[in-house]
Length: 201
Image (cartoon, rainbow, N blue to C red; front, side, top):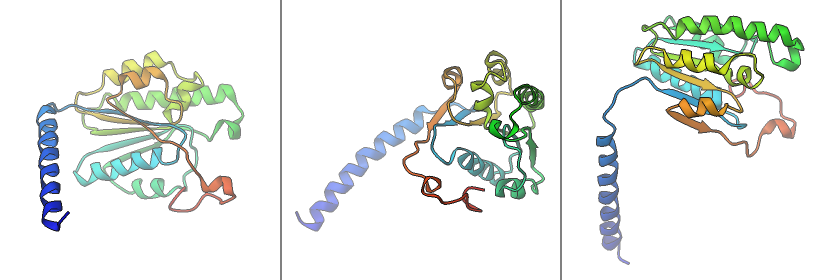
């Protein structure tokens, strides 16, 4: 096949593809606040959420981040986004369950944290709310899924919410607009490589 024939075939395929893409874009004619769930056992759920935080800030949006479970304050995202005037940053956890080893304390911390989140979900001035590692509080039964679903459904119509964490419950997936499941194919940690600054922390 000659170069000109290849070019002609390529152009025809791309014209067909453009017609399909343009039709899809035309069908998507609504504006609304989205609920995104980033789940699965692969690395990158929180990293993806914080990438969207950066994107939102680039558009002049206001953001609130609530970190459940995680208790450390030396991560790169914590250091960076806490400096930004358009970001509210709340660490609502005291560490992973195997570190705290206090079931009742973990339950109370989660419930207290949801009280903070509920105010975020009632604030029309917040364009994006990130609920980092929220799924664990639901998996362990520390928060009532019915209450969480109700509060998420009552938020301002143009407020976006991103929820991260493994094992997102079915109810959360049902009400979400976009769900991404990250798959763990290979991880340096299992080869004995410790968490790296700028990549894992």
